Image (cartoon, rainbow, N blue to C red):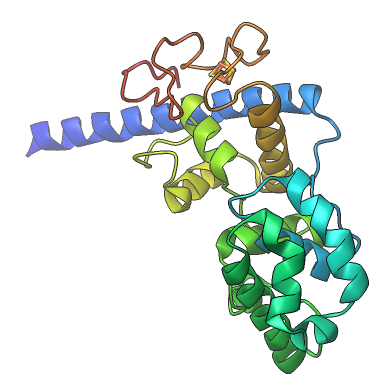
Length: 250
Ligand code: SF4
Protein backbone atom coordinates (compact mmCIF):
# COMPACT_ATOMS: atom_id res chain seq x y z
CA UNK A 1 0.00 0.00 0.00
CA UNK A 2 2.81 2.36 0.97
CA UNK A 3 4.59 1.74 -2.37
CA UNK A 4 1.37 2.40 -4.32
CA UNK A 5 0.81 5.67 -2.54
CA UNK A 6 4.40 6.80 -3.26
CA UNK A 7 4.08 6.00 -6.98
CA UNK A 8 0.68 7.77 -7.14
CA UNK A 9 2.26 10.81 -5.55
CA UNK A 10 5.06 10.67 -8.14
CA UNK A 11 2.50 10.48 -10.98
CA UNK A 12 0.56 13.46 -9.58
CA UNK A 13 3.70 15.51 -9.26
CA UNK A 14 4.87 14.64 -12.80
CA UNK A 15 1.39 15.57 -14.15
CA UNK A 16 1.58 18.84 -12.26
CA UNK A 17 5.01 19.63 -13.59
CA UNK A 18 3.93 18.78 -17.18
CA UNK A 19 0.94 21.12 -16.77
CA UNK A 20 3.19 23.88 -15.40
CA UNK A 21 5.60 23.40 -18.31
CA UNK A 22 2.79 23.62 -20.85
CA UNK A 23 1.44 26.78 -19.29
CA UNK A 24 4.85 28.40 -19.19
CA UNK A 25 5.50 27.63 -22.87
CA UNK A 26 1.99 28.79 -23.85
CA UNK A 27 2.65 32.12 -22.08
CA UNK A 28 5.88 32.56 -24.07
CA UNK A 29 4.04 31.82 -27.32
CA UNK A 30 1.30 34.27 -26.32
CA UNK A 31 3.87 37.00 -25.60
CA UNK A 32 5.50 36.38 -28.99
CA UNK A 33 2.09 36.59 -30.71
CA UNK A 34 1.40 39.93 -29.01
CA UNK A 35 4.73 41.22 -30.34
CA UNK A 36 4.00 39.91 -33.82
CA UNK A 37 0.34 40.82 -34.16
CA UNK A 38 -0.59 43.58 -31.69
CA UNK A 39 -3.53 44.54 -33.92
CA UNK A 40 -4.84 41.02 -34.60
CA UNK A 41 -8.56 41.13 -35.27
CA UNK A 42 -11.35 39.48 -37.21
CA UNK A 43 -10.86 39.75 -40.98
CA UNK A 44 -14.59 39.58 -41.76
CA UNK A 45 -15.97 43.05 -42.51
CA UNK A 46 -18.91 43.86 -40.27
CA UNK A 47 -20.65 46.81 -38.64
CA UNK A 48 -23.08 44.99 -36.35
CA UNK A 49 -23.54 41.72 -34.49
CA UNK A 50 -25.96 40.57 -37.18
CA UNK A 51 -23.47 41.26 -39.98
CA UNK A 52 -20.73 39.39 -38.12
CA UNK A 53 -23.05 36.46 -37.50
CA UNK A 54 -24.10 36.19 -41.16
CA UNK A 55 -20.49 36.66 -42.36
CA UNK A 56 -19.30 33.91 -40.02
CA UNK A 57 -21.96 31.51 -41.31
CA UNK A 58 -20.84 32.32 -44.87
CA UNK A 59 -17.15 31.83 -44.04
CA UNK A 60 -17.49 28.05 -43.53
CA UNK A 61 -15.45 26.31 -46.26
CA UNK A 62 -14.74 29.70 -47.83
CA UNK A 63 -12.22 32.52 -47.49
CA UNK A 64 -12.81 35.80 -45.67
CA UNK A 65 -11.91 37.63 -48.89
CA UNK A 66 -14.72 35.83 -50.73
CA UNK A 67 -17.18 36.51 -47.95
CA UNK A 68 -16.23 40.21 -47.84
CA UNK A 69 -17.05 40.46 -51.54
CA UNK A 70 -20.64 39.25 -51.20
CA UNK A 71 -21.72 40.73 -47.86
CA UNK A 72 -21.95 44.41 -48.96
CA UNK A 73 -24.53 43.37 -51.58
CA UNK A 74 -26.36 41.11 -49.13
CA UNK A 75 -26.51 43.66 -46.30
CA UNK A 76 -27.55 46.50 -48.61
CA UNK A 77 -30.52 44.51 -49.87
CA UNK A 78 -31.37 42.97 -46.48
CA UNK A 79 -30.21 45.37 -43.74
CA UNK A 80 -32.04 43.77 -40.78
CA UNK A 81 -32.78 40.35 -39.31
CA UNK A 82 -36.42 40.99 -40.17
CA UNK A 83 -35.59 41.64 -43.84
CA UNK A 84 -33.45 38.48 -44.08
CA UNK A 85 -36.09 36.42 -42.25
CA UNK A 86 -38.59 37.31 -44.97
CA UNK A 87 -36.17 36.93 -47.91
CA UNK A 88 -36.78 34.50 -50.74
CA UNK A 89 -34.21 31.70 -50.58
CA UNK A 90 -33.48 31.84 -54.32
CA UNK A 91 -32.65 35.56 -54.12
CA UNK A 92 -30.23 35.06 -51.21
CA UNK A 93 -28.67 32.01 -52.89
CA UNK A 94 -27.81 34.07 -55.96
CA UNK A 95 -25.95 36.61 -53.83
CA UNK A 96 -23.98 34.14 -51.69
CA UNK A 97 -23.35 31.49 -54.35
CA UNK A 98 -19.62 32.21 -54.75
CA UNK A 99 -18.94 31.33 -51.10
CA UNK A 100 -19.84 27.65 -51.72
CA UNK A 101 -22.46 25.43 -50.04
CA UNK A 102 -24.81 28.31 -50.81
CA UNK A 103 -28.09 26.42 -50.40
CA UNK A 104 -27.25 25.21 -46.90
CA UNK A 105 -25.82 28.60 -45.94
CA UNK A 106 -28.95 30.39 -47.23
CA UNK A 107 -31.09 28.02 -45.21
CA UNK A 108 -29.04 28.75 -42.07
CA UNK A 109 -29.09 32.52 -42.64
CA UNK A 110 -32.85 32.74 -43.17
CA UNK A 111 -33.56 30.24 -40.37
CA UNK A 112 -31.26 32.07 -37.96
CA UNK A 113 -32.84 35.43 -38.76
CA UNK A 114 -36.34 34.00 -38.29
CA UNK A 115 -35.29 32.68 -34.86
CA UNK A 116 -33.71 36.05 -33.96
CA UNK A 117 -36.95 37.83 -34.87
CA UNK A 118 -39.25 35.31 -33.21
CA UNK A 119 -37.27 34.54 -30.07
CA UNK A 120 -34.98 37.52 -29.44
CA UNK A 121 -36.95 40.58 -30.58
CA UNK A 122 -34.80 41.03 -33.71
CA UNK A 123 -31.52 41.43 -31.75
CA UNK A 124 -28.64 38.96 -31.89
CA UNK A 125 -28.40 37.41 -28.40
CA UNK A 126 -25.16 37.69 -26.42
CA UNK A 127 -24.87 34.38 -24.57
CA UNK A 128 -23.47 31.01 -25.63
CA UNK A 129 -26.69 29.28 -24.59
CA UNK A 130 -28.94 31.56 -26.68
CA UNK A 131 -26.63 31.79 -29.71
CA UNK A 132 -26.32 28.03 -30.05
CA UNK A 133 -30.11 27.70 -30.27
CA UNK A 134 -29.97 29.50 -33.65
CA UNK A 135 -30.03 27.26 -36.74
CA UNK A 136 -26.55 26.92 -38.27
CA UNK A 137 -24.84 28.39 -35.20
CA UNK A 138 -22.52 26.05 -33.31
CA UNK A 139 -19.98 26.82 -30.61
CA UNK A 140 -17.32 28.12 -33.02
CA UNK A 141 -19.63 30.74 -34.57
CA UNK A 142 -20.95 31.67 -31.12
CA UNK A 143 -17.37 32.15 -29.88
CA UNK A 144 -16.66 34.51 -32.81
CA UNK A 145 -19.70 36.61 -31.91
CA UNK A 146 -19.07 36.62 -28.19
CA UNK A 147 -15.36 37.43 -28.42
CA UNK A 148 -15.23 39.82 -31.36
CA UNK A 149 -18.52 41.74 -31.08
CA UNK A 150 -19.64 41.38 -27.49
CA UNK A 151 -16.08 41.32 -26.06
CA UNK A 152 -16.83 38.35 -23.84
CA UNK A 153 -14.15 35.68 -23.45
CA UNK A 154 -16.37 32.63 -23.12
CA UNK A 155 -14.29 30.23 -25.20
CA UNK A 156 -11.63 30.01 -27.90
CA UNK A 157 -12.55 29.87 -31.58
CA UNK A 158 -11.07 26.73 -33.15
CA UNK A 159 -11.04 26.85 -36.94
CA UNK A 160 -8.80 25.01 -39.39
CA UNK A 161 -5.82 27.34 -38.77
CA UNK A 162 -6.10 27.22 -34.98
CA UNK A 163 -6.53 23.43 -35.03
CA UNK A 164 -3.41 23.02 -37.16
CA UNK A 165 -1.28 25.48 -35.17
CA UNK A 166 -2.39 24.10 -31.81
CA UNK A 167 -1.00 20.74 -32.90
CA UNK A 168 2.19 22.07 -34.42
CA UNK A 169 2.89 24.26 -31.38
CA UNK A 170 1.88 21.43 -29.04
CA UNK A 171 -0.76 23.55 -27.31
CA UNK A 172 -3.12 20.59 -27.21
CA UNK A 173 -2.44 17.26 -25.58
CA UNK A 174 -5.83 15.56 -25.38
CA UNK A 175 -6.90 15.92 -29.03
CA UNK A 176 -6.02 13.25 -31.56
CA UNK A 177 -5.93 15.49 -34.62
CA UNK A 178 -6.32 19.08 -35.76
CA UNK A 179 -10.06 18.64 -36.45
CA UNK A 180 -10.89 17.74 -32.86
CA UNK A 181 -12.15 21.26 -32.10
CA UNK A 182 -13.83 20.43 -28.78
CA UNK A 183 -10.71 19.00 -27.14
CA UNK A 184 -8.40 21.59 -28.68
CA UNK A 185 -10.58 24.39 -27.28
CA UNK A 186 -10.61 22.80 -23.81
CA UNK A 187 -6.79 22.45 -23.85
CA UNK A 188 -6.26 26.04 -25.05
CA UNK A 189 -8.57 27.29 -22.31
CA UNK A 190 -6.33 25.59 -19.74
CA UNK A 191 -3.04 27.11 -20.88
CA UNK A 192 -4.13 30.55 -22.13
CA UNK A 193 -5.44 33.14 -19.63
CA UNK A 194 -9.17 33.84 -20.14
CA UNK A 195 -8.71 37.52 -20.99
CA UNK A 196 -6.56 36.43 -23.96
CA UNK A 197 -8.97 33.88 -25.47
CA UNK A 198 -10.26 36.18 -28.21
CA UNK A 199 -6.83 37.59 -28.99
CA UNK A 200 -5.15 34.20 -29.25
CA UNK A 201 -7.81 33.07 -31.73
CA UNK A 202 -7.24 36.06 -34.01
CA UNK A 203 -3.43 35.89 -33.67
CA UNK A 204 -3.19 32.16 -34.45
CA UNK A 205 -5.38 32.64 -37.52
CA UNK A 206 -3.13 35.47 -38.71
CA UNK A 207 -0.01 33.38 -38.08
CA UNK A 208 -1.54 30.40 -39.87
CA UNK A 209 -2.32 32.53 -42.90
CA UNK A 210 0.91 34.49 -43.03
CA UNK A 211 3.61 32.10 -41.83
CA UNK A 212 2.48 28.62 -40.83
CA UNK A 213 0.35 27.53 -43.77
CA UNK A 214 -0.90 23.96 -44.04
CA UNK A 215 1.35 22.96 -46.93
CA UNK A 216 4.35 25.27 -46.67
CA UNK A 217 5.08 26.49 -43.15
CA UNK A 218 7.88 29.06 -43.23
CA UNK A 219 9.80 27.82 -40.18
CA UNK A 220 12.91 29.73 -41.25
CA UNK A 221 11.06 33.04 -41.08
CA UNK A 222 8.91 32.14 -38.06
CA UNK A 223 9.70 33.98 -34.83
CA UNK A 224 8.06 31.15 -32.88
CA UNK A 225 10.50 28.53 -34.16
CA UNK A 226 12.45 28.27 -30.89
CA UNK A 227 9.20 27.57 -29.02
CA UNK A 228 7.74 25.20 -31.59
CA UNK A 229 8.30 21.41 -31.32
CA UNK A 230 7.40 21.05 -35.02
CA UNK A 231 9.90 23.61 -36.33
CA UNK A 232 11.80 22.41 -39.40
CA UNK A 233 10.26 18.97 -39.12
CA UNK A 234 10.36 17.14 -42.47
CA UNK A 235 7.01 15.52 -41.80
CA UNK A 236 4.83 18.61 -41.47
CA UNK A 237 1.89 17.59 -43.56
CA UNK A 238 -1.05 19.68 -42.51
CA UNK A 239 -1.18 18.26 -39.00
CA UNK A 240 2.36 18.67 -37.72
CA UNK A 241 1.54 16.53 -34.77
CA UNK A 242 4.51 16.97 -32.47
CA UNK A 243 3.20 14.41 -30.00
CA UNK A 244 3.29 11.64 -32.58
CA UNK A 245 6.96 12.30 -33.05
CA UNK A 246 7.56 12.31 -29.31
CA UNK A 247 9.24 15.71 -29.42
CA UNK A 248 7.08 17.62 -27.02
CA UNK A 249 9.06 20.35 -25.29
CA UNK A 250 6.46 21.35 -22.72
S1 SF4 B 1 8.15 27.00 -36.47
FE1 SF4 B 1 7.23 26.23 -38.37
S2 SF4 B 1 5.67 24.75 -37.71
FE2 SF4 B 1 6.22 25.99 -35.91
S3 SF4 B 1 4.73 27.65 -35.86
FE3 SF4 B 1 6.49 28.40 -36.98
S4 SF4 B 1 6.05 27.98 -39.14
FE4 SF4 B 1 4.65 26.74 -37.91
